Image 1: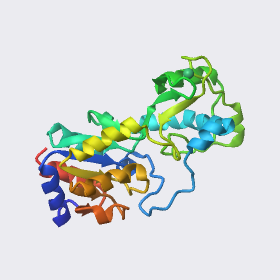
Image 2 (image 1 turned 90 degrees about the vertical axis):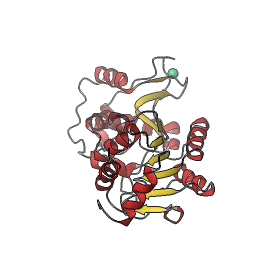
Image 3 (image 1 turned 45 degrees about the vertical axis):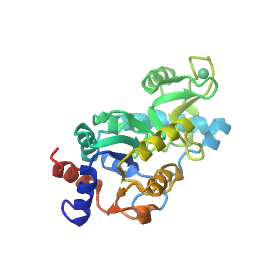
Length: 279
Ligand SMILES: [Zn+2]
């Protein structure tokens, strides 16, 4: 899909400038990071970590970190794809008024995008559940390596989950040693991401609303808009009379609100869009 009336409409809309991008998991699948819901909208077999399990079940938390210790390396190997580069190019050309992402993989920034609002946080940071200290995930990895010299799970799955963890056998989980917050000396650490069942910090949501209300268009990239966390911005834009474009493979919850709808792979559409706009 590098030509067609839908793409023409998208080119016209984004070409006006002032667009705010809202991206989702579908933008990162070409980088090897799977979408929980995929093109069919059906949940995969792996259930994502929930806020309730992480905060109330020490064993569940331990399991997450053991899996994350392995999975983080694979997330770290992921590279931005043509879609991320196209978004950065559109921003560099002055056509975007903001980039909001539901992804926690940092790939927009790796492609050169600036001032990216990470709606659901980022895997490159940790936050302490006791004192709130925010720390670098890479530093935690060094501490975990030191605490787990013999931890080499042999059955690590080759597919990493979007939360940055992988499936591991139970016996491997028992061998894993987790470390705690250095700032307060013992608080449990959480990746600085918003888990299912957790609310996005209100000031972050407010910032996104301000971006959307001030936009000339809202362009959704690679999200089925299943969760209200992202869908509410589409509702707000529609209410304000701001044109909404949705580029996604397969149907989305926002289709009836969309003025422009491109149902095609982002890896084809976005480079074509950036190219048509002369960038
Ligand atoms: Zn702490």
